[in-house]
Length: 127
Image 1 (spheres, one colour):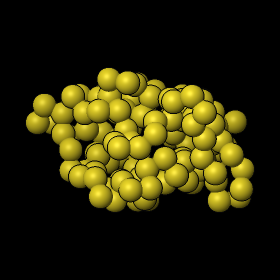
Image 2 (cartoon, rainbow, N blue to C red):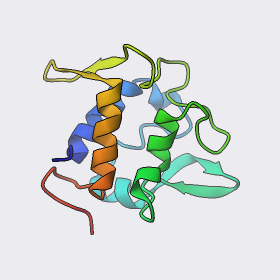
Image 3 (cartoon, rainbow, N blue to C red):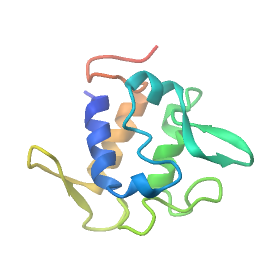
Image 4 (cartoon, one colour):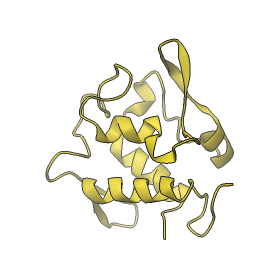
């Protein structure tokens, strides 16, 4: 079963605690509806807005690509900037419930969430 949107938000909060200082800010701290239908604020790709969720190919969504790809996305470096990357060996985050999640597990969970069409709750699917 895929993670929920709330769990995705917690992952992103832990991965990018200083994202509030970035041009895009904490764009994931919006409503589910805004996140799944909106664009990454404050950044563009070749003068075009960047959808948060790529509904033509969910797993090619920019926010995942920029977290997991060493080359980043659209001439933007892998995120988070100036911090350890989820792809680095030994990377993990501590969630609010005290559990540890490795970078590899985070990426698996986000892929699974996107493959399920980004459900708000783990039992839902976006249509």
